[in-house]
Amino acid sequence: MQSKNVFHHLLLLLILCMSFTPAKGKEPPAWFTERLEKVDENNWKDLSFLTRAYREGKFVKRDINKTLFYLNKMLKMKDGEMKHVIQQQIADIYLTKDYSVYDPTIGFEWMEKSANGQNHHAMFKIGTFYYEGKHVEKNQEMALEWYKRLSDADGIGGSLFLAEHYLLGKDGIVDRDLGIKYFNRIPDISSKKDVDKATWVLRARVYEEVLNDEAKAIQAYSHLAKSYLDTLSHLKLGLAYYEGTGVEVDLDKAAGYCNKARRLEYAKDAFTCLERISNGGGSVASHLLGDYYLRRKTPDPERALALYQKSHKQGSKGAASAIAMLYQNEKYELFDLDKAYAIYSDNYPADYVSEGILEKICKRDRDITDNKTTLFGVVLSCASRDLLMDAIKLAGASVEKEGKNYWNDVYATSNVLSGTSSLNVLYTRNNEFAEAVYTFPSNMNVKQTGEIQKLIASKYGKPDKMVGNENMGDVKFSWLMSDGIEINVYREWPQTTTYLSYSHPKKLAKVREQQAKEKLIRDKKKRESQNSAF
Image (cartoon, rainbow, N blue to C red; front, side):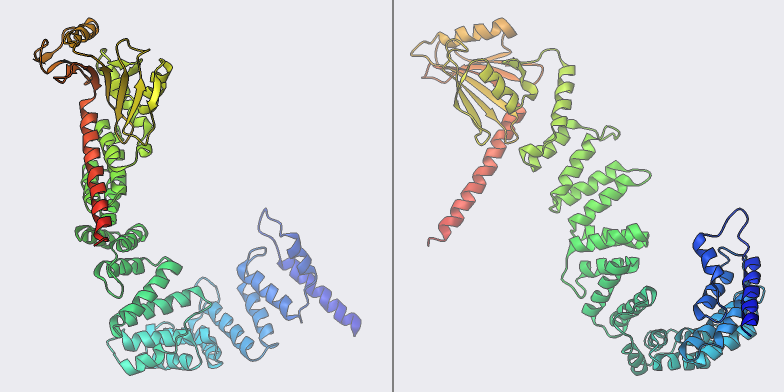
C-alpha cells in the first residue's frame, strides 16, 4: 500500500514538472522549482500554490482548466467561509471573457452559491448583476433585495448603495428614513482604501445635500482632500472657505484649495474659483493666477504683472518680489532693472535686495557714459555703503561716526583734503549712496567759496549754473554730471563756511521719503504710549 502511494506521488510530480514549462528564454526562480518538488496534492497550501500558478501563468503556461481542477479539489477540503470564497473564485473564472471556459450562466450559478453562503463580495456582485442586467435579466427589485441582505450581514457595500439610493435619489426614489437607516450602518473607517474613500464621498454628499450639516460636510471633504487628494473635495473646500460655508472665511486657504484642484483636475472650475477669490480681495488667489499666466505654455507676462500688482495692492508682501523678478527677466519686454530695484528697495530690508541687480545697473550706467563721477575711486552713481566706507578709511580719513544703523557716517578729513574738517556721507535705508558733503570751515572769508569753485572747475569744467552773489550772501555753483550725479559748491549766509556736496538726486529723494515714513511711525508709537497715561 505504501509503495503504491509513493508511486502515485512520484507520478503526480512527473506530471507537474512536465506541465510547468517556463516561458521561452526564461527559467523559473529557484524558490519556485524547490516548492514544486515538494508539492503534496492533499495539502491545502500546495493546492493554493498550484491554483495561483496556473491562473497567473507567471512561471508556467497558463491553464484555466487545471486551475478549476485544483479549485474544485480545494472546495472538497474546506467548509464554511473559505468554501464560499472558493465558489466566488470559480465564478470569477467562468465570468471572465478572456478565458476559454467563459460561461456566464455557470458563472452566475457559482456566484449565487457563494452569495447564499454570506460571502460579501459575491452578494454585492449578484446585486450589481441584477441592477445592471449583467449575466442575468435586469431586475431592480432583486438587486435591492440582495443589497439589503448584504447590509443586514454587515456588508459595507450594501449599506453604501442603499444609503445613496434612498437619500440621494439615485434612481428617482427618495426615502429619507430608510436612507438614514442604511447611512447609519456605514462604519467610520474601512481597512480597504477604495471602500473607505467611497464611504467618505457618500458621507460628504449626504451631509451637504440631505442633512444640511455644513460643518460635518467640511470635515468629510477635508478627510478626502488630505487622505486621498480628492480633486472635487479640494474644489469644494476652496469655495467653502471663500463663502464661509461651514467654516470662517479664509481667502488664503480658499485660494490654496482651489489651486490644488486646478493642478489635480477640474482645471476650469478651479480657475473660476481662483478668479472669484481674487475679485473678492484674495491676495493669494491673485498671486496664484499671476503664476499661472507666467508659467503656462504661452506665457503672458503683462497679464501676470497686472495680477501680481493686484495681489500687492491687496496686501501681499510676496507679490512685490514676484513683480521685481518679472522686471529682472531679460526674456520679457517688461525687462527694467531700475523698476526691479525700486520694487525691492521700497518693500524689503536692505539685505534682501539682490546684489546682482546693483551690479547690472552699475555696468549699464558705466556703458552709457565715460564720464563717471568718483569719490575716493568709487563710482558714485551706483556706490554702496560698504565700498565707500572701505575707500574713505583707506584714504586716511578717521571715523567720527559710522554704522549701518545710522543714516549717515561722519569722518574727519583735514589730512585727506586740505581745508576741510569733515565729510558727512548720507545713505538710504538700503545702504545706497545718496549724498556726500565736505565742510570747509571759514571765519569771515567771503572769497573761500569762489576759490573752491575754481578748484572743482579745474576738474569738471565750468559750472552748469550759478545762483546768488559770490561776494556776498547765499551762493551756489552746480555741476550736472552726465551719470546723474550733481556736484554743488555753496555757502549759507551770514556764515562764510563753504560746503562741497556730491549728491544722487533720486537716492536723496528716497532718503527724505524713508525718513518721513519712519517719523510717522515714531510719532504714532509716541501717541499710543501717551494715550495709556491718561
